[in-house]
Length: 394
Image (cartoon, rainbow, N blue to C red; front, side, top):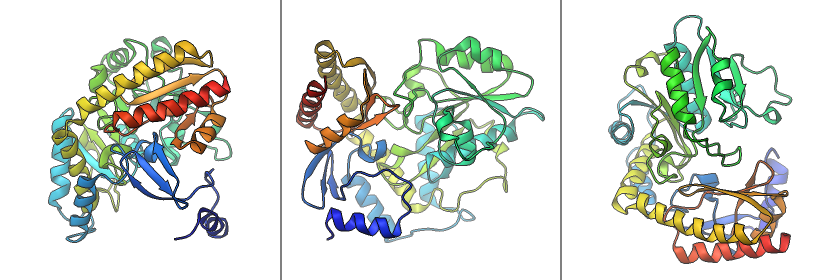
């Protein structure tokens, strides 16, 4: 096995440097723990950018992938595959009873939703209202929907038809609606935007605006879906049902996949020939998705995730009371944001040196998306590291 230094040299020679990477090569993971090439152990509180819902290499998902790979790896979507149908049924039954389109990532799911919105809407209606601070993905349609100018630099012109309004502002949203508006597209909780939780009544207000103006309401649940908030989906957490919902990240317990769910009266507008995904819903992804849902239910992980969230709330409230550097803490299940008064990037580096992996987003927000089955003793150990690091920085 190569050392971290040797792997970095390999990347420098052959891999496009479009990512900012930490100078460490990770080689093995189990649950909430991960190890680098030198044998250093880390508690991972941001596993796979939130994709690894159960941490690293959960046994039921690993077994499902191994078993399926020995039977059937890939066939095109011009054929029927039982596992994909079962997976779609399981997602539908745990959500609003819609139909599924499968792909490989969140941005692809959002591309499918954008197309469906335009295909389903009356002629002349194509505009989609999105929100400042949102992040919907990296493809041209999804990045056009993203209300953050820093992601637009150098790749203009963007796809037309997206109107950005302030997140949480119902009046501005209503004023942005015109005769060409087709839909409102929103993250129930802005993840990359700083774990921003909407004001009370905002999402219900969007639902009311859509009903009043005959618009579609689309929730981007790429980061919030599949148990992250303590409910299957964040729309259930807030009690507001969308017409279309997109999923990815945690949907397969770490295996790459994405999905769009749409109400049954809307879904057929994505008619044959209008959209596709070669690898979408492939047998291995479907097996991993089924195993993920079963693992959540068989191990009671929605409830365990809520108890885990309670431990975070207690510990982080204590920190916030004692440390002026913490401006605000925000929670929705195990989706956690800690807003600091200064840049949070150095704290990420310092925590890593002490054996804790975390993330900083929006400049000054420490973002935690821990595995929902993280043992409580590891939570306390990790938060001790975080507290020590923040104290030194304050």
